[in-house]
Amino acid sequence: MAKSLIYIAHDNLNRNKGALKGANPADCEILFVESQNLLRGARWHKQRVFFLLSAARHFAQELRDEGFVVHYLKADNTASGIRTIASKYGEVIATEPSSYRLLASLKEIGVRFVANDFFLTSRKDFISWANSQKSLKLENFYRWQRARLDVLMVGDKPEGGAWNFDEENRLPPPKLGYKWPKYPQHSRDQIDLEVLAEISEFELLGKVEDTTWGTTREAALAQLKRFLTDSFKDFGPLEDAMTKESWAVHHSLLSTYLNVGLITADEVVTEALKRYRKGGVPISSCEGFIRQVIGWREYINGIYWYFGDEYRASNTLGSKRKLLPLFTDSTKTKMNCVSTTVAQIDERGWVHHIPRLMVLSNLAALADVNPAEFLSWMREVFVDAADWVMVPNVIGMSMHADGGRMSTKPYIAGGAYISRMSNYCGDCAYNPKTRTEEDSCPFTTLYWHYLARNGERFKKNHRMFQQLNGMKKLNDLEATVKRGDFVIKGLERGEI
Ligand code: SF4
Image 1 (cartoon, rainbow, N blue to C red):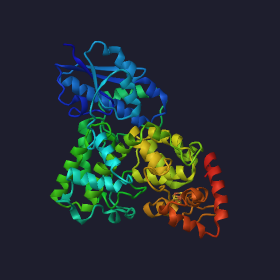
Image 2 (cartoon, helix red, strand yellow):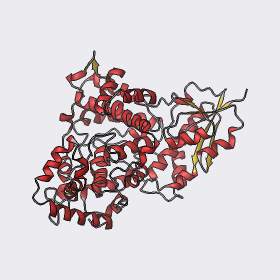
Image 3 (tube, protein in one colour):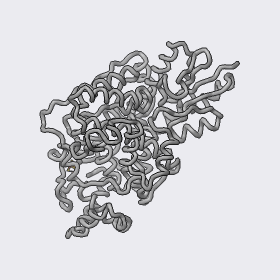
Image 4 (tube, protein in one colour):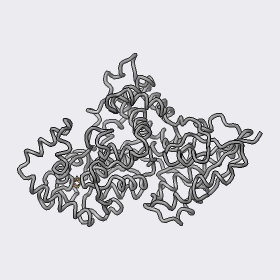
């Protein structure tokens, strides 16, 4: 009988999941495809391309070492790569893809799918949950997950007496001089060096000189160990803080590895709970971390599949502005929080969730940037930016481009939030406390500009009542809107 061919996508790098689970070198051969069109089709960050290619090539080598025949092809696109050799095999098998694009192209060539078990919640289970809800509140999903997976539960009650400890987990950054943990540096081997040499031929964004990201399962496990040893304890209270003294704060950096399968959510949860049970880690940190893994991550993936492929094109607010120059060039702004964040992305292809949400996305929403343009940029520059991650996060959560299908209110804030949660404002050319002056913080001015231009749309949204009421009480709204127009023009020119 002809052997099967197992196609391994770049985010299926795990021997015990999906199509590879239980696979035997005697019955099947393995195929990886490097799509050259994808490489040339967008201006990806070097860190992203390096990580994805090198991790796949390392994993391919591990499978060879185990005795598999592995074909590693470079082709115009994934489908043409598979077609090159598919006819020699009984069938082509793959894990259900994590993006609509790959799903469509593999369906077209008749690939047989194995259920995608890289998540704790199957697509079917999420749909059943979502269909049973009046609104798709993350908190309700998270509680359902906690109970269903029996994580941090005492009987049917949450451990520690509460489902979340958000109130304790909103500390600003500690005073200057706080000792931040060191982050592991991953040395480069022959495969890494080959990939680095190859990608230098492509026109890519950012830098890749550092050794922030490892490219093997071993590196992913080392990252998990480092997090549990040095950062887990203080993760929760400081998870939203931004500081010029530490680019990662106490974040785990595990999303990069989780999103390609080098480590899995069940492993991460098991190890985190084991460490928590040893003592010395407050429940606020443990619960905060667990929520990101079994709550937010799973919820976002579920939403991606629940809302369908057309969801990415949503633009309810009709935002048309082109991507602002400061997103691609940190020197195009005097806003300290933005230039610092963009410079960090340039370095490592990564910043944590608060600069993503409350600096970058907040600015894009306030300045009325076209959601599709902003989504493309976010997809290109983050090392962990899977399609399923970015589409709901940008379209639903941050840009409110879906008219509130995912989050009932837009995530927007003025400079006061960034001032409270970071130490960026002290060195900034702008003042977060004012809105109409020449040096007023663009976030503060644009926050009111956003409410003024969208007030009519939100007037029936009870969650926006307080903000709209605050706007009505402003006695300088006209001057604020005038300055907002000026700020937007300046942002377009890269002069603010
Ligand atoms: Fe950012 Fe405004 Fe603070 Fe400057 S003043 S760092 S622009 S929030």
